[in-house]
Length: 261
Length: 250
Image 1 (cartoon, each protein chain N blue to C red):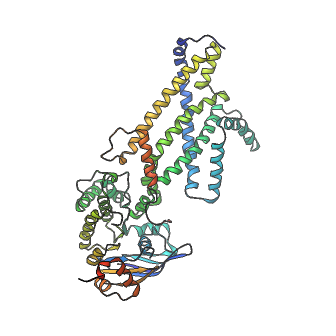
Image 2: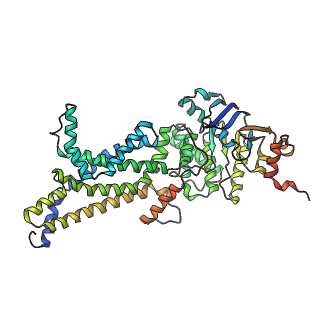
Image 3: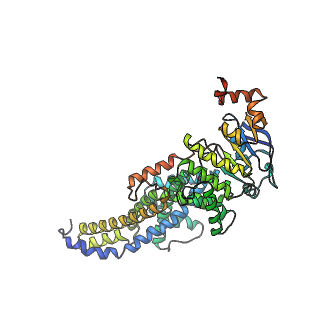
């Protein structure tokens, strides 16, 4: 079972693993971008209840939420070239990274679409009516009134998604992408100091997660500054923020009557 | 002048408005009364197309719109002629009081920021909120929020301001401050259509009172006519129920 435990290896591995942090972050960043675009494309037909597309979007979401990411990776990596071959498109030479980013992107998109949907519905409908009454077009009402508030509501869920995605990227190694987890495996097998490699790896993931969480918390505070009343101070805990989220959800549809536009 | 002709609206099979005709002269304050479910709020919402009438014609100022053939562009045009004050205030929660008032001026009326700001500050001072310019709606009381809502409506300089039960969501002790502001702007000759349950207010501010029930206008007239000498049985019933203190004499 490998070489005896030696703490110095943990520190020795850190710089070696950090050299592949860029790859991990590239996967995270790339798939977030794909995910946000896909998320909107999937959320919009559901928000506006467009008949056929609505059903397709639901099937899409249940597929990506209901199957393990590892299987999705294999399906896309081995399956996609086969399907595209039927359309006379050869992508078997495309870099693995492309498949990885697409798969993670589509996977994140499914979760993202649910987040977008929930946040947009959580913004009080009355404000949209007020925007229309002021004379705004539906596009102006969406971008100026809905979106900023929906984003603030979405941030806590979004930060969970980002951190889950960061950790999920460790599976990209199974397709042979040399990101952090892959590097740790390799280092481990080279020296037989597996535990040290994994401790080192865990430390890096932890620090990166915590940094991301902090950054997103700052973003959330900024986006939610209108929610702060005089009585609540500047330091607020996550639990309280959750309750404020619920408050916003609870105030949905407080107005009278429905609208069609 | 505002003229509604033959306004008809149904939700599914339920007919809410049945061929309503209503004319409001420039500078007039019209109060719409009626039991809940009588269609008064729906009628008000039809005037600025938050509710799409199935049939009829809306004339505001010099703009005429046939509800059967209304394009999106027509609707935006029509909406710019009116402004609305909502029961639940419906302020933009992520914007300060000042930004709430400025929003329409900058985005819709395309005023410069400075011009919009000067105008908005003046209006907020008018409704007594000169010291709350940078407060977010969550930091304001219901009455203050509603006054911001009124300033927001005034800023657009519409042909008509529509008030949808502006005091129904307020604590009783805050009702007064909002009514005082509405009274003040009524005196300035701004055309208003008000749906309310405040009988006292209706009595001394309205030029014209309309009583609705079951999707039709049952009776209309001056406040004196309607309150002191209602002609229709349904109006009498309603007034009796809503002003029980008039039932006894000392």
